Image (tube, rainbow, N blue to C red; front, side):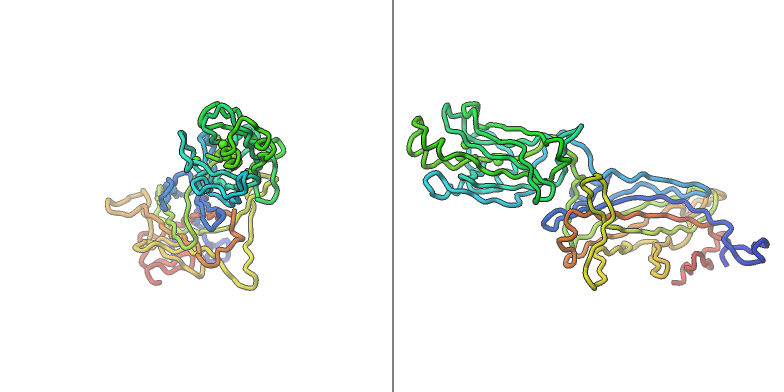
Length: 400
Ligand SMILES: [Ca+2]
Ligand SMILES: [Ca+2]
Ligand SMILES: [Ca+2]
C-alpha cells in the first residue's frame, strides 16, 4: 500500500489520493524537415553538430509549479546567410549557341562568395538560364528585414554589355514574386558587382530564391565595342553568390531520417518529502501557417497504416523505465526529500531518452514540418523510504 493513498473518512473509507502534488513543466524540443529529407532540430541550447541537448534541471517540489517557457525556434541574425543548397539549375546557351564552358557550369558555386578572378567562383546562367536555391532560415520582410544579395562576376571591365537576371522569392516554390533585376553594371566597378533587394510588404517571408537570366542578345549583337570572341562567348549573368543579410536563422541542427537524437532531463527533488517521479512525453507534428505566422498541429497521413515515424526509447543504463500501460516514464525508485536527507541519499536523476526518426516512412509530407515533444513531469509522495514495497500510480516499483 502506498503511503500516498490513505483512507479518507469523508469518502466513506474509500482510498483516495490525498497527497498528490503535481509539479508540471513543459520542455519543448522541435524538429523540422527540410527538403531532401534532412531534418533540423531546434533548441536554444543545442550547438550545431551535436545530438545531445541539456534541458536544464527539472526541480520538483511540493506545491510548486515550474514552467519553463517554450524555447524559441528561430533567432534573428544580422549575419550573411548562404543558401542551404541548390534546388534546381537550368543553364542556357552562350551567344553563339555553344554550351557554357564547364569551369563556369557548377551550380554549387553560388553557395559561397569569393573575390578575385577565377571562373570556378561563379555559375554562368547562359541566356535564359536559371538557378534556384533554398535557405534553411526564413527570409523576412517587415520591421526586421532581410536583404537579398546577388553577386556577379565581370572582373572590372571598362566596357561590357549588360548581363542581368530577374530575382524571385518564394515560400513554397509555387508562387514566385519578382523583387528586382540584378545586373553586372557598372561593370568597371570591380571584380564583383553586388545587387541588393528587400522583400515587398506583401511578402511575409521566403525560403527560396530564383534567378532567371534576362540578358538580351540584342545588347551583345549591337555592341560594336566588344570583340567577336567576346560576343560569341557571352554566357549571361554570372552568379558568384546568392545570399541574404539578416534573417531568422534556424538553430541549425541537421539530421537525417534514421538518425537518433538524445534528450536529457535532470530531475531534482527540492522538496522536503521523498517522491516518486514520472514523465509523459507528448509528441506532435506541426506545420507552418503562412498567414498567422504560427505553427499549427499537423496530422501525418499514411493511409490505412498506423505509422508513427518517431520512436522514443529510454537510454541504456538508465534508472528510468517506460510503462506501456500508463504510457509514462518512471524513475525506478524514489528521490529523497530535504527532510532528514541522508548523505548518500539519491535526490536527483537524469531521464535520458533517444528519439529516432524512421528512415523509410518519413516521406515528403514531413517536408517543412516540425516535431515537438512536450514533457510533463509529475511527482507523488513516496511512502517512508519503503520504496521497495511501493505501488504507486499502478506501477509496482522494483517488481516489473
Ligand atoms: Ca559577367
Ligand atoms: Ca557571363
Ligand atoms: Ca561563388
